[in-house]
Amino acid sequence: MRFRRNETTLNNRSWLGILMLLACAPLLQGCSEKEEMTIDRVRLGLALQPSSTLALIASEKGYFRQNGLDVVLTDFPSGKRALVEGLLPGNVDIAVASDVPIAAAALRGEKFKLVASTFTASNVNRVIARRDAGIEKPADIAGKRVATQKHSAVHYFLHLFLMENRVSESDIKLSFTRAEELPPALEWGTIDAFSMREPYISQAAELLPNNHVIFAAPGVYKQYDVVVASPEIQKQSPVVIEKFLRALLMAGRFVEEHEHEAQIIVAYKLGTSVEMIASGWGEYSFQLGMGQPLLLLLEDISRWMKAEGQITPNFLEMMAFDGLEKVKPQAITVFR
Image 1 (cartoon, rainbow, N blue to C red):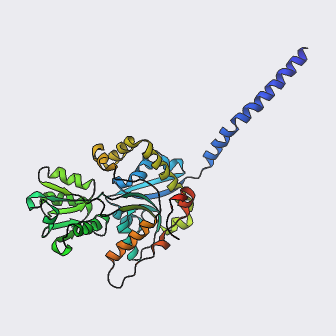
Image 2 (image 1 turned 90 degrees about the horizontal axis):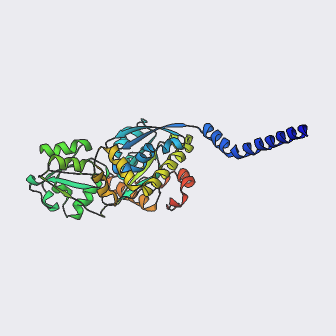
């Protein structure tokens, strides 16, 4: 009887061991897959502005790392600078830029790929002016010294803003400078007004607390921010693009489910107040996409900018759909 009791105990232990192994198999498999995940290093050029929310959230919440990316982030004062100073010279592999500098670069014959739009809004940009320059309403800008950043979203907005208020570009003294130089230029009085977006509008307002007026033009320009990749990384490492977009998709879900926390993160990253970020939040759409309106807008912008004899670029050929097709195929509405 003793022999049989030991044998029974042995059999029970054997079955128990087998059951434990079966129960742990999924966990062990998950650990194995985690260990085997390839971590790809990618250099990202990003503007510190609200339109960069998805990438800022993905970085802060660790979504890039969760999707197998080691992202080395370089920040720029604007999306144009991220494209022109980061991506095009080869200093970064991926950048996020708005539609206008993308169209301008395409007109110059630069080579890059459009991966997905990450942001749309139609009331982002503003014109801020000095009251002591005699500016109280938009029409008062005629004859004044107005500055902006050349071939950027705020430049195109200024063009449309003037048209909306029946002021000709030839009626203003237009100059171009870097985004970060505009608030002090307005404070010092070397310019009378400038066209820009946050955080530079708020910075200028703080420098001239009782001597400024801010103009908006909702709906005149629906702008897009777009993920732009070097042709090399898009061709040689398409999985990197897919991982990048999956991280942004996770960030998008976080923004939808934790709006206030997302605003806190963005405010911290931008070095500004949560109130300032929240004030414009309702105007923004943080969604991955590749739509026909973006394609048409790029063509419109290039026609506005191009010199005589220049040909409108084929933006459809510049669009790379592979990554978005794997991550969010329903977001592609471009006619192909």
